[in-house]
Amino acid sequence: MAHFAEMLVSKNEEVNLVSRKDIENIIENHIFISAYITEFLPASANKFLDIGTGGGLPGIPLAITKPLMRGVLVDSTGKKTDAVEEFIKKLKLGNLVVENSRVESAEFIKKHKNKFNLIVSRGTVPLIILFRYALPLIKEKAYLAAIKGGNLEEEFKTAQLNNGNKTLFNEISNLATEQRNTSSTNIDFATTSEILKIINNEDKTVPLAVEKELLQIEKAVDKIVEAIKNGGRLLYFGAGTSGRLGVVDASECPPTFGTPPEMVQGFIAGGEAAMFVAQEGAEDLEENGARDVLGAKVNSSDVVCGIAASRRTPYVIGAVKKAKEIGATTLYVTCTPRETFNIEEVDIPICPYVGPEVVMGSTRMKSGTAQKLVLNMLTTASMIRLGKTYENMMIDLQMTNKKLVERAKRIVMTITGVDYDEATKYLEVSKYHVKSALVMILAEVSFEEATERLAKADGFVRRAIQN
Image (cartoon, rainbow, N blue to C red; front, side):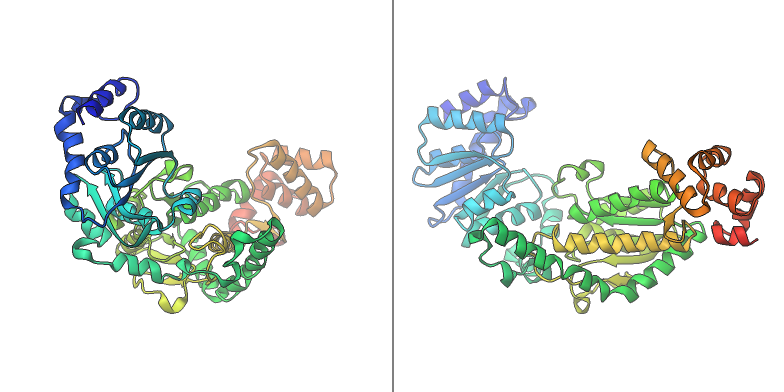
């Protein structure tokens, strides 16, 4: 154990394995407490997984103390796993292996599914996340030992794990999005062609699921249009794939429909960084969603739309609850059956039930597609109702790149019949405002009068021409 401590201190000069502020207390605060886990372990716990091992803690002290136990030490940082592998070789710990991987990755889960009867971890992630990481990797009877500090009472409350409570496990297990799809049971033996056909056949069911929710989507669109006309906004709140879909839909509105960026906004648990890398634990507290609602200064004129494939995401529920408390109109897009929807603070639930995913629980697939279709409808139909199109052409687009400038010219040419040079001239006079250029040409009026007509017509080109 002393030899390990010496190596850890030495290697820590090169790689940040342990907080350098605490390096003097390496024995008491790191190695001893890691080995002390063994005092609480039953004899049956003989194969463990150390999640987020860092510098080999608690895995290496555990393996030294219990040489008959076998363990896998995993960390997503290559420099750390290289250091741990070096420690294992020098200490001649034949009962340990180290892997550079993400414990939640499909590859890792496939390799180690249901292999461990003990999960150990040292303050890596909130308990609720640790529990989720462990579920696919543990045997039917298993133990979890986590070295944690901070507000443990709050963590237990969030994870609902205290006193052996399996509420969270049961809730997740019973979710529609977590069931197995009988059509893809043997997909791991399928050829590439067969895999693609299975996925494609399942994807075909998604539009039909959305079709069943058209009445609810219609109600939502009417609320959004009413809100925007009265100075309100549409604000999406989601986590993971759902959150990213909301952000993407919101970000497309300004260039497509010429809306100000603040009119339609997307918020994702974990903030901007979560668009690119999963922010562990960010979605697991309702107060995080409530805080983002307050940060967005939501008011009673706004429409807040929660997006959660499983329905149960705490961040999203917290956002919707706080929005309703403020007085905003609340929508919710989920891919679970309508009869299971139980969030009282939601005014209009939209529930395209797509059934189990091809890969169990992978809601970026059918569920993500269904959510994208719904969000497309919400914003596109709302913008059409707000006069952002002429026939089926977008006429309020912003000229943010050369492609859109040329598209604007083509739209003007298509609607009015003028040639390329004439369309360019009118767009230049109208300061590249397509609506104004159209009214100028079709009503044969000046830019100033076209602007006045559009204002009186609430932005609708056809009405402005008739006036």
